[in-house]
Length: 230
Image (tube, rainbow, N blue to C red; front, side, top):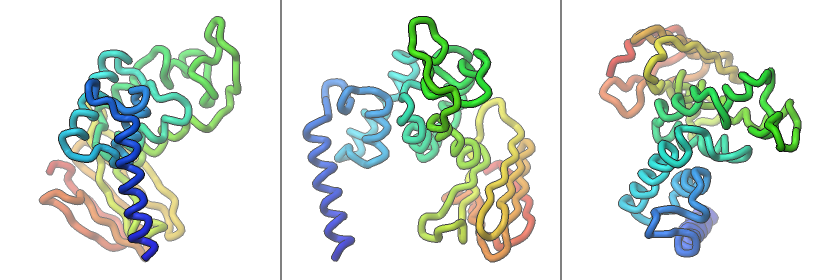
């Protein structure tokens, strides 16, 4: 009964959000920022596939045009935008944003002496308030490296990585990836060299490799080798 109640509540809430905040002439929600757009898409706010597609296309157009391939989601938006990129398999888009050397972006921080993530993209810029230079809120970007690049994805039906997915998302110009994810069962280890993937599955767990593809395969604990080409 609770499940049905909250499912109906969510459906009604989504409809209300769409009714009050969607702008059909621009295919945007609320203020039309990338955060507004990707949050609406993540939550399933668009009522049909055509609207969702139009919102997504507008989001991508704004990122490439208005924001010149830069991250434009602010402090609290980084993990939201990152999750959207992972779900939508927008790995090359995220890589493009991360490779920008100027403001706003992570390389801008590094190029200006950062050894940790700052509280604001503005730290140190003339005329801007200098804020904390040891701030972890921007670290939400980290999940992209092991969930998209290395492809280590949790299975919500089997919490704690009792079962998990290995679903790496290739990125232009990146041919080597190595990641380790600690779990209560032991470390999950992934290493990608070119088209070759090495995987360590902890004891007591299982992994589905390349889900939803013709090469999908579920394996038990042990060391495994796979070819990346699908």
